[in-house]
Each structure stands twice: as structure tokens, then as C-alpha cells.
Length: 247
Image (cartoon, rainbow, N blue to C red; front, side):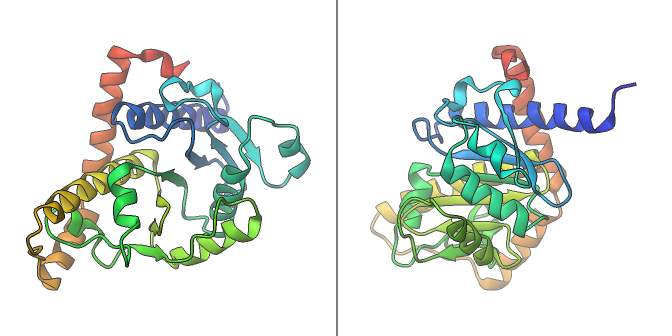
């Protein structure tokens, strides 16, 4: 009988590779930058992450790197482990163990909202209301993250929230499962597209009332199975069109 730990890692690899492929197919990736990770240990110190400078559209399950924050020497022997990925994901997984999955991206419309003064996601429709009062914001971008202190700072900004709009930078989504994280980051960028399109008309935005926005956000929180089903449906498409992601 196969060890359950191996089974869990195998499925985590498949799901993470699938999410990376989906992101590329949705046009949300940025060249060979950005990273997705999934924790394998309860304390978040062991996690899988995509390798440095490999295009999301090519990543296979076997390409994912296993990082162990308890063994810093092993990290030094991995030229395919990006420093910013280790700094951000390593600290957030360790300091926020409930963040089982972390997705960090710079999608165009999301980054446009992150570059507003102040960065925000106004609740103007059903999608954007998902983030009402549930979005942390970073106002102090200081360049590329190259030190553990920066990863710890970002982890602290979450403060019980699962999403961080990174001012002048992009977005970080955390979740309990890969499926929930993927649907969340997909919906966030869809929301950003709607908001930017509405702004581009030059007319005032019609905001939802705080009461309606809050109820809508709560409704979203009650249908995690919707997010997981979206992810599984996307995987079925991958299975048909590019099944090598499972390799």
C-alpha cells in the first residue's frame, strides 16, 4: 500500500501543475516570473513551488520543487529555486500555517487596481463584492523581495485575511486548497477587468451598499464547492488538451 504522505504529495503536485497551466491559458501569467506553492507539512515549512524561470505553460507535476525551510543548506544547492519565491512563500507558509496554498501574480488588470491611489477593489458587482472587507492592502512596495524580513512583513499584513492586494506590485491569494485558491485568483482578476472597464467609461461607479456587499461576500464564502468544481472542470479540459501536466 502506498504511503499516505506520498499520495498527498502526488496529488498536490498534480493540482499545482494544473493551476499553473490554467493561469497561462487564461493569460494571467507574467513571462517566467511569479510563483504558486502548496504546503505539505502542518507547520508550512515543507512546501512545493514552481521552479525558477520555467514558463507556467510547461510545468509538470514532477518539475515542482520541494522546499524544506528546516534545511536551509538544501536550498542553497537549488539554483532553480527563486530567491523571491523562497522569501515570500517560505515566510507566509511558516507564519500563516492556515495558508496551505499561496498564489502570487501580476495580472494586468489586477496590477492596475494595485497601482491606484489608494489600491482597492470596489464592490460594484457580484464578483468584486466577494472581496468586500476581506482584502488586506500593502502600501509600501520597496522593490523585489530578497530578504526574509520582507516575506515576514507581507505575512503580517494579511492579519487574518486570505488576500493581499500588493500596492504597485500585484496580488497574493491564500487558501486551504489549490482549487479554492485558483478560483479566487481567477475571480479577482475578472473583477479587476470589470472595475477597470467601468472606470474607463469616465462615469461614476455605482457601488453596492455595504449591506448587500457584505451579504454577497458571505454567500461566496458558503460555496467553496463552487470554487473546487470550477477547478476540477478546468482540469478535465487539461486532461483532454495537455495531459502531460500530470507527468
